[in-house]
Length: 206
Image 1 (tube, rainbow, N blue to C red):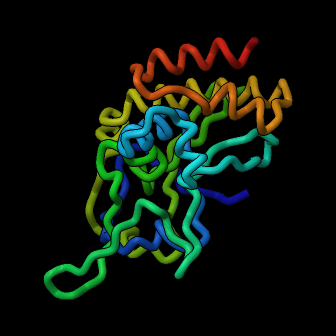
Image 2: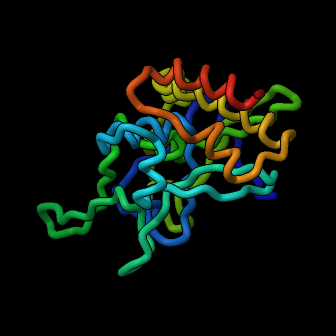
């Protein structure tokens, strides 16, 4: 198991928009709220359209539960479909996320901060996780406040915690890929997400 450095109060990091975390073999796991944000960004009516149109796919994790992740494009190289490469004034290539800032997946918005939640022990820990093995931003002297980050993302973190609870139920019920999709990841996007997550809770226990 990979050992990460715990973050207690602050951490050093500054994004250089190198896009290393948006290319190659990176895996961007999503929550239902991420699907909600992405679907609304694309002006879809349902979360199902993200899967039908190749933006997302379901993958099975080490706990044998099905989770959505962004489906990277593979030509001319592997990259996130929401990545937009541009040249700055000095003709330096920079990578911009089309979902930044309000539609970005939580794992991307928190980088390089990772959240480790133990549902059985009811504990959580925040750790420093390199966004990519060769990320230049980890060498920055810029100090960032963990508390400020968590405060700005409080609602999303609450939604993520709700989702982890649903995943525990899915794991115990041994839901198939089709059942997982129907009960956790298929919903209309025209309602507030708090209403949607409440409905998902009802679906998962039926």
